[in-house]
Length: 263
Ligand SMILES: NC(=O)c1ccc[n+]([C@@H]2O[C@H](COP(=O)([O-])OP(=O)(O)OC[C@H]3O[C@@H](n4cnc5c(N)ncnc54)[C@H](OP(=O)(O)O)[C@@H]3O)[C@@H](O)[C@H]2O)c1
Image (cartoon, rainbow, N blue to C red; front, side):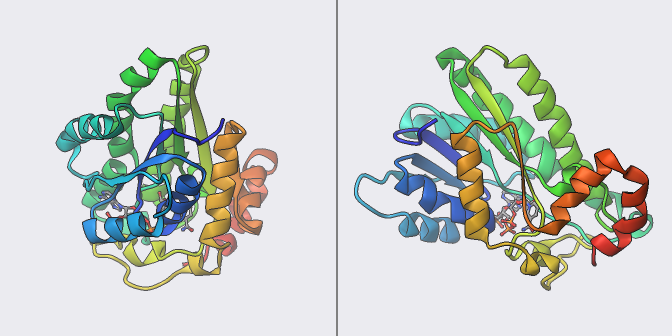
């Protein structure tokens, strides 16, 4: 696919992976709608995209407000008359063992990381089906393929994305609407800082993500996966090997996992 004149809606565009993707997609000719909760940061990212024939709009939203998302999707569709693709990059992390984590934290992770993207997907899908073209690019995680410690709610929410979008992909065969699953390992963003601790407060400090690959490298790989219509892409350093071990040697992975997944 080519990005020229494609209308692409990027969630999680106020920071990290979504924010790094926006200028790349804009430079490649896409028309962008940028979403997240913080409007000022979205305006900043829109300014970073500036250039000749660049069209970028912002649409602040909160994925936790599930009831608002269908209306947000309608608003997004009116901005450029259609949505050709969505990059679901918004998400929140977790640090804390399951035995000590409030159930409310599990619910929030499921809403923000899974149900919010599902609600948006269902709202834009009819338009894509009517036009016979579209793409959902879903930023999952290696934790969507394996179960690392201290991330039970996060891993559950990311595994749920694979279940939903795997079934959706099967239903979309022959419609022109495609699904690309993106599974990063560690990417150098502030993701760990906002990770929910057992009582729901943010962790407030950096974690192993800061030792990960650069966010620009990750964004470039995501663009390539979209361009080449990749079904699923693993992005990162050695930690992505966990996804292969899960299939080839699950017993070995279970023994190694505590060491592979630092706090
Ligand atoms: N960094 C990594 O190592 C890594 C590894 C694997 C997967 N991932 C995945 O990559 C995606 C992006 O993470 P990142 O590393 O770029 O971290 P990030 O910089 O913290 O980005 C998270 C984005 O999600 C948005 N967001 C969070 N809660 C939201 C809500 N309730 N409603 C709407 N937007 C919300 C944030 O914006 P606001 O705060 O402005 O709302 C922000 O734009 C996530 O889905 C994450 O699971 C990251």
